[in-house]
Image (cartoon, rainbow, N blue to C red):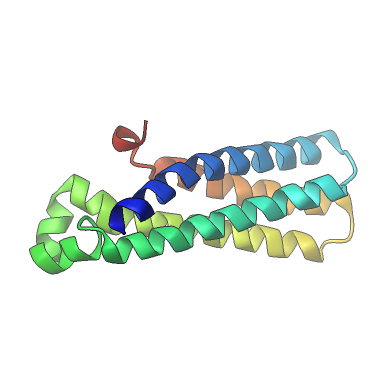
Length: 146
């Protein structure tokens, strides 16, 4: 079961990164070009929200079943985990930053829905999705991912 969840989490991550990059650049382009907010923009931002939340849920399950997640903390103690950069990445940094990524995408999506005109909608999406994208890219375990 662990292996299947790990594969799902790893391969779904490619979709998440692509969709969040695309949604972020779409929001930035919309904001800086002054284009009208359309149904396509709404769908893209919603799709980014959905794939990110699904990935976070899969990762949360993985945190509890992976030997590098919660089991690492329970078996080794928090002091050992914090001193080992690999264990710290998988058990502490990656889950925490990905939670923040999902939170920023959720906030951006929620705030943009309350705006009535295109410019503020794109501004909210651009701001929060850019922060989320930076966080997302900062804590991907690149050495095991590529």
